[in-house]
Length: 127
Image (cartoon, rainbow, N blue to C red):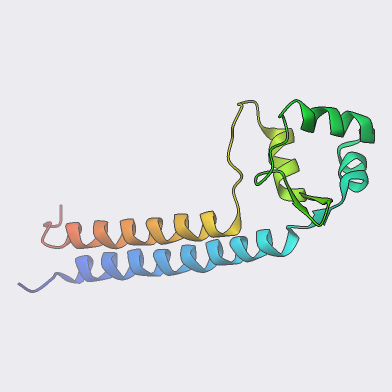
């Protein structure tokens, strides 16, 4: 079945939008990875505008979680700056951070969805 001129243009437009979105999401994902800094305990407390004892208390109470907010190596705690940012913005307990890999996967899903929509549009007659 031959596609009409308008259907071909619509399909090309969807493909172009999908490509642009994929590039943009990849750039966002890379920028998130590039800005994902590590802080020691004192720096993390300063970053949050709190005292070191406040940070330690929140960690002891389980508000900051190892593997999500911080990691421990050779007795030193390393806090993820991005995870602290998410903690500040969150109003739900247990909110998961959005990192570059998650954004990349979201971009792939959007890209796939747009292509599926383009396939579905084939054969629809013009109004």
